[in-house]
Image (cartoon, rainbow, N blue to C red; front, side, top):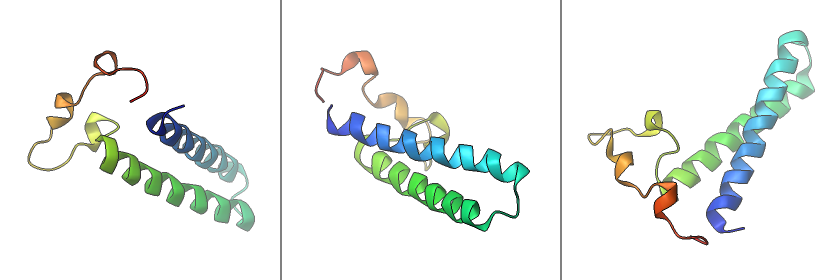
Length: 85
């Protein structure tokens, strides 16, 4: 697995954990331990997203901010990259 894929996998795991805890907290709002874990995974998701975007560009069009809002389309498309990048 290349570094980009590894980072995406870590991000996916953190997002999944945060979402599952979010749904759990909908029915267990008083669970302080679950809330702490949720906050941990939300922070981890933000940190990993920032890391990914600083190295590889925005994850989605909505993440492309600044004057060149749609500049993300200038990045290589998945079929334009070689395996192992």
